[in-house]
Image (cartoon, rainbow, N blue to C red; front, side, top):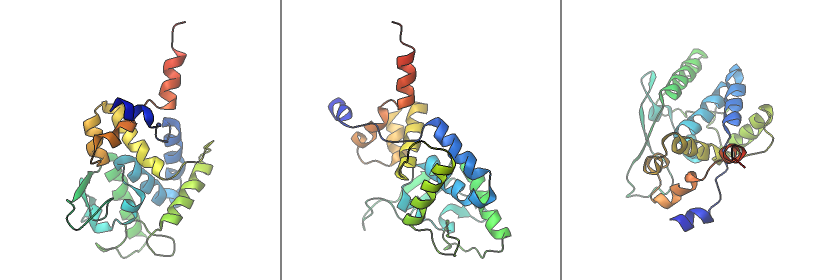
Length: 203
């Protein structure tokens, strides 16, 4: 595995400061709260773009409250004989989801189990193109000095869990990787971590 790890570059993920700024700028404005919840969902679960966009309200909510466990209907590599995949929702994320759905109901929106979780301003399910445009716009508003793809949020989620636990098996389960070799990329130090360690060297 070591040769595989050495050959793979560290995945592009948000720094702790970028993550804080992204969630702050989207969370402080009412018109940004949908996007705040969407980005929080990506960072809190490691879900891929197409997995998030396929979610309906009934997948995530039981009555008025967000579920703790969400079973995915759409996920990477799905076939007729695929085993269901499940993700756990952090408590902070569930609270945001509850607030988000309550706000949509307060605005007079008719919500059913098959209503898309994330909808565009014109009432359609958000598309991948729209999400990528939104993410680029919010990065600019947050003052990012570089531009990242939406997939960087998944890398951020997996990197955050590995750095918090140093447990590659737990990270593999979180990322829903079939092979632990795919998870090994998250064992690389982040640029921030590398810079801190080098700065503290005795010489």
